[in-house]
Image 1 (tube, rainbow, N blue to C red):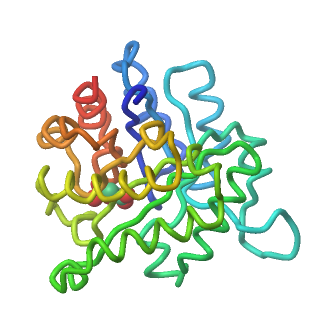
Image 2 (cartoon, rainbow, N blue to C red):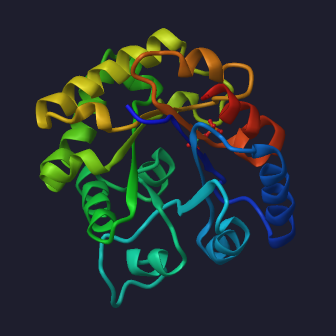
Length: 247
Ligand code: PEP
């Protein structure tokens, strides 16, 4: 495994002024991180991130991408447009999109494939709801979600990033314990290993209320290769502490 990856997901937060202050504070404190670092912003701010982050150790990306190449898809953003603004990553299948926008496993897989086709790395989110965990369905749910992507992208599976994000831990302050997270990451690693001889190359991130206090123990787990960070990516000091914990 190469360096860990710490990716921020700003969700639908920010403004030109707030983003500039946040990014400048991050750049002032980041030094030469030994982790890979990225920020995923709302689409209107990608040009701003490009101009603030170009040449810095922080990459940037989007929070979604269209499954279509171009055309009559009002409101959608194509991967070509993301490339125009220098995006390295696109989050796909975040639970908020699965939940509020009805995104299916198949659509998420198509989005991942579309991103890969243009050289943008999809950060594919998988994760179970609280009801699914309580019904002992966690493993079946995450395997079903990842299987759709493996089926669609084939040998390109080594080019994706996976993010395990238990839905009950996102934005709730309830973090999976390191043991709970590691157990699911091991399942995902085994599933990747069945699909490719190069499964160790795939970063499997943990996401769900990761913060400055709990990052180090989560990131110490053998199959946790980084974090997808929501709330804490909106605070420079907290995000930088997570990046430091990934060293
Ligand atoms: C997320 O939105 O991907 C996330 C993990 O959010 P939070 O860190 O706020 O739980």
